[in-house]
Length: 214
Image 1 (cartoon, rainbow, N blue to C red):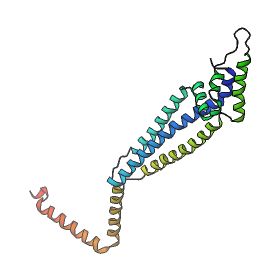
Image 2 (cartoon, helix red, strand yellow; image 1 turned 135 degrees about the vertical axis):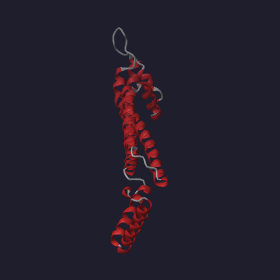
Image 3 (tube, one colour; image 1 turned 90 degrees about the vertical axis):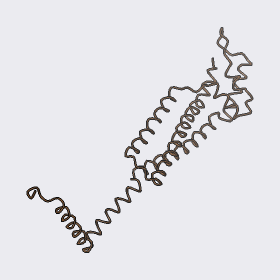
Image 4 (cartoon, rainbow, N blue to C red; image 1 turned 180 degrees about the horizontal axis):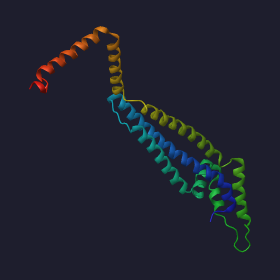
């Protein structure tokens, strides 16, 4: 059973590592989704892909996968011993003193620690006062937060790109609109179109006379 005194001193670091792992997982997820979304957006611009459900599917995938990771992480717990080992790696001066202090248990009969146990625990706590154990993890949490925010911007930019129609369909619509505008503004083209339409109707009338004449 971990030592209660050392366990209480490690609590901020344990919470920091737990938060950092959550941010790391979501950062990786959002980065992958952002890259995949950008590749799809590039394919739309290059090959004219058009899927009406692309944006809802992309946003739904982002929400569902993020909730899945968040729920899974909420159910997980950070081991105090594993955090203590990481702290010893970041603070070489401890030299396994933290793990040793974490393993100290009071005397079952008196409930007190003997002299050597008290010394080991005190040395570990003094090291925490000089070099706070949770200080490096707070820096990691901050840096991970910046990277996660950048990955979120990529996801948002990809969603913005998916709101636009494919270039091919957009160019076809623009061409039709331009032709209609030119047809209205140019009398010669409009007159030629009316002549062509009249000629087509005349040909159809000759080939297929009304039933009354049959």
